[in-house]
Amino acid sequence: MSGVEIVEVAADDDDIRLDRWFRRHYPGLKHGALEKLLRTGQIRVGGKRAKANHRLAAGQQVRVPPQAAGPVSESPRHASRKPDAGDTAFVQSLVIYRDDDVIALNKPAGLAVQGGTKTTRHLDAMLDALRFGAKERPKLVHRLDRDTSGVLLLARGAKAAASLGKAFQGRTVRKVYWALVAGVPALQEGRIDLPLGKRPGPRGERMMADEEAGKSAVTLYSVIESAARTTAWLALWPLTGRTHQLRAHCAAIGHPIVGDGKYGGEAAFLLAEGVARQLHLHARELRLPHPSGRGELQVTAELPPHMAESWDLFGFDRNYSGDPFAAIE
Picture 1: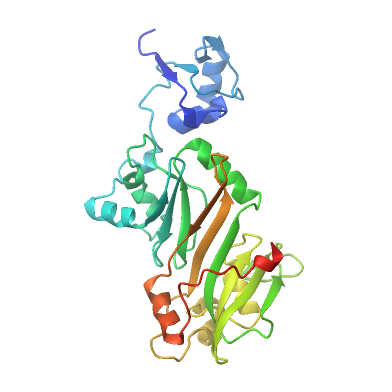
Picture 2: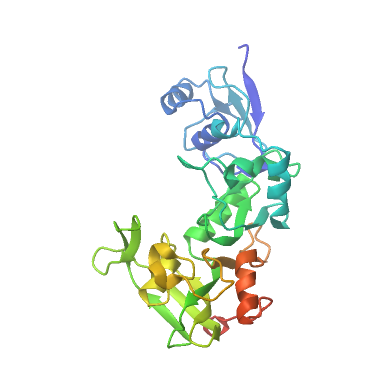
């Protein structure tokens, strides 16, 4: 039949379901149409009929009929968003680690990871600039809030994305954040075990303590340094991944993150000259099994300019490389 394609399964698509393979590479093909093509045998794998849940293997050949065929491509939502030269140089300057499976960025504060109704400039629209010769654009595997800076991981293929996704979902990732908070906690280290739920408020919808209907949220903290009784530098390790968890937990114990007016109100803004009114929350380190299966991946990101200035102002050592949670490993 004219127009039939025979497509070889790439290594990055190894072990993916057949229906998901079509969804990834032929996003215009509706589910019902795919099922009909499978039932009538027009789609075949290795010359044989296959079902939607068939697991593909790298190197296999898929017969793609003309009803489905089209350019094997990324999702159409990225088609018209090719980064210009300025965005390309900018996003490539954020790379702090790269190998065949992973790219790590030091995301700046103020840059959204994905777009929205009022967000036209965001990281997701620039990912084509991070191919570095690969056929596929890298994939987002987790998120950081717009105003939070620090380590953001990207997968360079479907197989790595699946492995990293399982790691984040299975809580095998160690995530350490640095924060500047108002005041100094009475205990040098502790565990904040406080369920969180969404609640409306004067500063918009927020995550608030909700013992009855909230979802479990647990954060470990350790005070690294403090300046008199004015402020403290905390290391934070979220054991769960709730929206705004660290911001809500710090505010709940009476020590909001500096610059976080949404959760801390005026108490979150220090009077000290030279302290920016920006959120002082930084994803400092990620540690997790490498998606290749070879050892551990550990990535560290330097502080953003506004936090570096605050660290210098209070005499904190921003080159600190100790492990504030070593005692509980």
